[in-house]
Image (cartoon, rainbow, N blue to C red; front, side, top):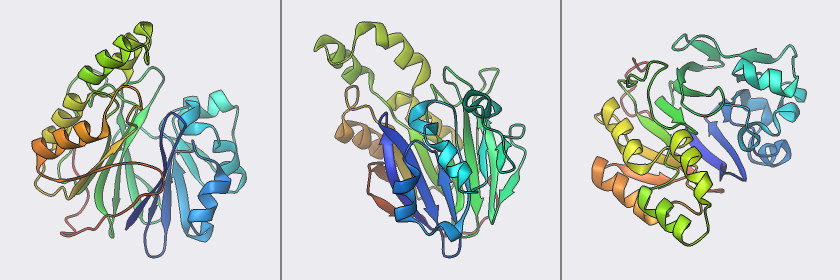
Length: 255
């Protein structure tokens, strides 16, 4: 299965998981017009959105209007005042649901609006974690979320403490923004600890999402994760494509 990155920043987030016969869209922060240029819509079985912020959900109405089944937290539909036959609210955490051949479960994410992450399983893919716009990887009670059997990880690595402080000193990031960044986005060491907590036995590659242009350095974040995990690490940027292969076909991930 191929991962196509449409965008992974505050300007707009969007990703495509495309297999031989079907495709799944992640996030609606990139225009539908751009998305449809890069995927055969006849293959698309659904769209997953994590939360209502514009860089993740701005264009969701266009995807709904096209008839694509769209799954998101209920707060997204309430904020957009959007209800139709193909809009679906996320079920309870860990409860599986299907979009085509994809089996999907939600997990809790820690942001400043209701947000979820997704565990996505498919015969061609194996098991993938998709977690963005979250302070860490803990449940509603603050306990670590552990997911066994992952083959691929797509996870936020928004900033590093060192580069955040540097950006504040240089005036590229305002001091008043610091608390929100630290409470709603994932720092590189937290990213590493979250990946390690799930185990790396079957993980082939790690894709770092939503790096801040002000508060992170790509080479530094990528290097830290490579050193800590020993896995192939990619930084999600518009236009890149990554092959995600299910090498062991070991079934669904377990929490």
